[in-house]
Length: 66
Ligand SMILES: [Zn+2]
Image (cartoon, rainbow, N blue to C red; front, side):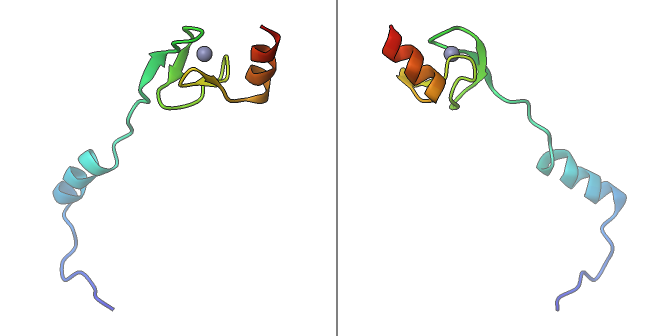
């Protein structure tokens, strides 16, 4: 098995972690249907719509009523 010849320095390790293991905040947008803040490219947790279509059971039932 291949083994690293030298220990990675604190400096190099930290430089790597600074870019590769970054915690990125989710891209939040207002829902086009109900204008509630939601994560983009996901079904809205508030109204259950995605791309103008009812996805979740709750949203489908709500859409059928109206
Ligand atoms: Zn919504």
